[in-house]
Image (cartoon, rainbow, N blue to C red; front, side, top):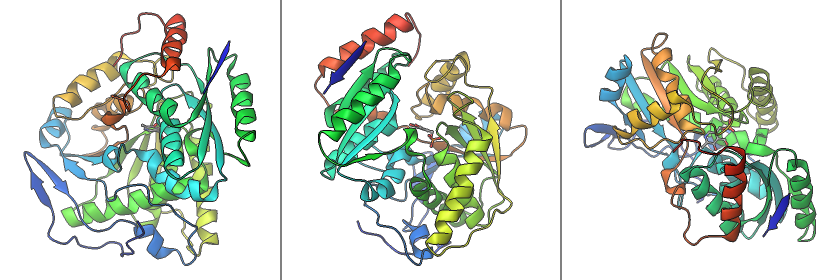
Length: 378
Ligand SMILES: Cc1ncc(COP(=O)(O)O)c(C=O)c1O
């Protein structure tokens, strides 16, 4: 069954020393400085970009957590805090995607897709409109919060199961066509243009770490549609950084896999060449970590639930779909690396929603709980 419900750039160089940083806040260390869009400075003919985020996102050192995981250093890149009313990795992609899209954008994701929430919210803010088809996933407070944001800002078609999902996509497309010229953006916004946002994020982070004195040996990031990992890899090549991008699979291997990330990275290199920047693969490498997915996208695992508790004790709010699964890999990766960055992508502000309860929220919960009753999750 289906239901239809309805800054301009600061051009500065890389690497660059901060003005008067690092800033020390409480027991952790935050490094903040003025490098906001290092990629733009390197493009001779950049594509149009909308200013949606607030960069650079903060970077924190967590010595106690590092010690408990057997690491010398654990840096958390707070990309969950890169925007208002909520941030996250997808905001960086949308800065490049939305100016290139038409008035109505169609995409898809799970009920708790932060991609769809960010797309709907930022498109509405710019006078564009998003129509999205959503498939069910296990219910939890973060899923409810994210879905509330999507429902508040976009046109949503809920599929009651994976079987009805293709129909939901067709309905989302048809509804969009009635509103004007339609642009299709694939799930997760994984296109080379979108990936420019993550390339810039890697350069931004390299600059912050240079200012702090040393760059981590590995970056641990959730792997979904692959755009974030591909962008970090390309950005690391561009920054001449010998780092391993440890992409922890949070969805099915036919979506989240090595081939896909490397293909996206290769296509992004081609796009950069078109904009006047010739980047070659360097010493940065990709490692796909597949052992923490459990039963699938959005399904809690014992490891993820433990990670939520462990990180919460240090003030890091994780949820089980993305961050907690990536975080679960840290203890094992500590055998290979001494200094690791955890790339934090999910903004806890999503969980409380924008306020008000949309009628489709109850419907979505009923679908999800009929498929996965009594799931323990956060
Ligand atoms: C919060 C969050 N973190 C990480 C990811 C994974 O990023 P990517 O899809 O670019 O691999 C996603 C994907 O939707 C996400 O929403």
